[in-house]
Image (cartoon, rainbow, N blue to C red; front, side):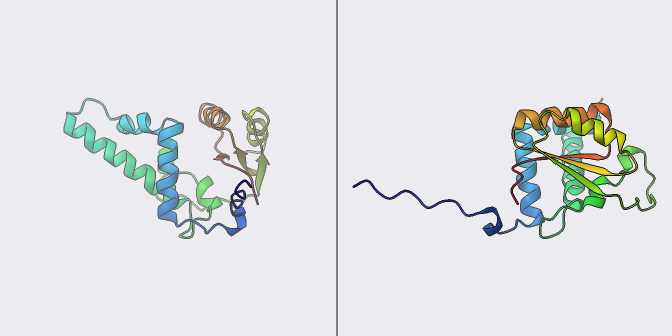
Length: 165
């Protein structure tokens, strides 16, 4: 007789949560492999006219800032801090001590595709609600991220992954 089939993978609820450190390491690695973070960090945050050592230092500083900002968006046990995720940053022109952002509802769209609908909804809800677009396919996540960045849709976050509860 044929061997028995392998056991099914554990359900999402059975998987242990990742620590913030492990989550950031995984996210940064995934973004470098799939969505172009590596070339963006190579640019060193836009530093120009530097020596090779200065460029390396600028790249390391840009990478540290990115990791630190990403880590601040998660609790120690790896849960998303929605208010921090949508809070203005110094890069957005906020001063060093911005007032706390208003607590806005967070709306979620699963299977967001390339993001036409959710980007329009988020733009229409600017200042009234924050949006999260969840999409499984990497090419669609890249399209969503482009739409967010180029359209300056500040109240839309993109989550690449399966929307399993």
